[in-house]
Amino acid sequence: MSRTAIEPHARLKRSESRAQTRARLLAEARAAFLRFGYARTSLDQVAERAGFSKGAFYSNFVSKEEIFVLLLEEKLRGDAAALGTALMPQDDYDIALKTLHGYLSGRPDLLAFTGVAVEFLSQLPPRSPAGLRCAALYAEQRAAIAALVAHFALLCKCQTSPDADAAAAGFVALALGLATQSRLDPEAISGPLWADLSVAFLDRLLRSG
Image (cartoon, rainbow, N blue to C red; front, top):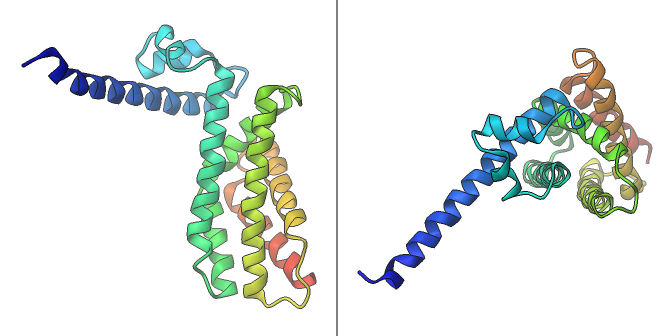
């Protein structure tokens, strides 16, 4: 068999191996951020927990900042997609509210990661490349939440619809604030409390217009 005949397979195997390495490093980095916070997580910790050298980290990622932005992107876009899938097909207002509550209360890890995100965001210069990237990601999240708020308004048959963009900003602010408190007292500021307050906020907003 000629060398050229095996090169595509070899390239595929290298590509698969690289993808597996990146996925493992991302998973271990997320676990370390949740356990130690952003500032106290070191690249040595991440590489060692993943079973790789620090050099393997730098062959896949530029910095700790880059890997956190990638994890934040995965979280925000994953949340938006999962909520859209769960809520958009709903045609009953009360069931949709219960579905939203169930999703939020069942994912305390989302609130925990948001707490680390608050720590990370507070350290970013506003106009830095990472700061601009995060601003764009949160703008995407607000747009996705605004679409859900508009959907809930239709289900509620509200006489006056709320400003969906403002409501979305309120939802994000609520999550960021609770996540900050949850890092200090996770038992008091829990996923179920986040779900209770979010549903109450949305219901009150829609019924009052």
